[in-house]
Image: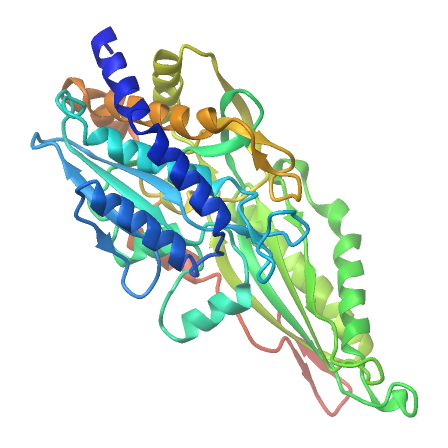
Amino acid sequence: MTEQSKQLIISAVEKHRELIFDTLDYIWKNPETGYKEFKTSKYMEDVFENLGYEITRAEGITGFYTVIDTGRPGPEVLVMGELDSIICPAHPESDPVTGAVHSCGHHAQCAALVGIAAALKEPGVLDELCGRIRLCAVPAEELLEIEYRRELKKQGKIKYFGGKGEYLWRGYFDGVDLAFMVHTTVGDDFVSRLGSVGCIAKSVIYKGVAAHAGGSPWNGKNALYAATCGLNAVNAIRETFKEPDIIRVHPIITHGGDMVNAIPETVKLESYIRGSSFDAILAANKKVNQALCGAALSIGTNIEIIDIPGYAPLINDDGMLAVVKEATEEIMDVQFFHNPAMGSGSTDMGDLCGVMPVVHPYAPGATGKSHGSDYYIVDREAATVSSAKMQVSMLHALLANNAERAKKIVAEFKPQFATKEEYFAYIDKINGEGDRIAYREDSVAEIRL
């Protein structure tokens, strides 16, 4: 990158600092969880249209995208910002009704995306680039509220619980050759990792028999006791998980009974099974199902287990990682750090990495614990303005010089799945539901794991 190009990018982003900060503040004050980001999506849509973009809104759900054509042939690069928040009622600035709050940093991603969109409208910024750029405000990265998303699926409004997988399946990313998204992180450095673990989402329903808790408890079958036995059984198998597989199982009880003087008839859990590969996730999930079913059998209840494809493991592309490092150090005059370990969080960026080269680096600016009650953006400049500069610089590195860098990365990429259809056919096999125990009259029980 020439010094002239560098200064052009810097000034193009900095010109829109006020718009970037306004976006950051609005979305922070209006947090919404996945597939409910109605105010957030509308705000972003208005900003993009006011900048002169023609946008394509997602049909029936939140989010949108726009495609910028340089007029010169070349690959298409997808750049995203995530619309949704998490739920953390303990956060001092969480929504008092929903408990939603952006202690995930997604509001900073959206602000940076606005900065990118605004900068690309400035004279001269696209002059050296080839191909196309797709900017996307995508919903539902945080895998929350499983029951709500199951209902959306039943209604035919979504097929997949994560926004990027849903958009990929709908064809909103058709024609894209490479993708990246920059997350906000705690600390002072621009960083990347090898990747992130994938996950299966689980909804578990223990089904007992209600009875008077004081007068005739022997007539009941306590679903809460079965559930607590199940949680203990899962804890008892943790030592069987191999460290390289990075297995994480973290269930919560979402419904523990209806009233204190009745034996709980229905108890509901939600959980993830996380792991570094599909094989590891599926093997751990089988063990967990066995533990949960064994607990139900010990109390005499039944158990329904709904297994849902979560997110694929993310592996950042080596060529894209090199672009991130070079582009960031060049535009920011800072050192970029790469951690060769895999992160134990999950992201639906993994749903894209099996079919195209992707990278998911991090920009600094936050403090506190991610998803915690003390998370805040403390360096607004780094989290938004610097992040936008970083990403425009990445676009320049990929698409300048006849897009040679992007073409090389695409040519060298070896996809795990030949097509998105092949990927979805694979993960659709993960789906499972229904009661797992059949009690027979001859004192035999059949268990389906």
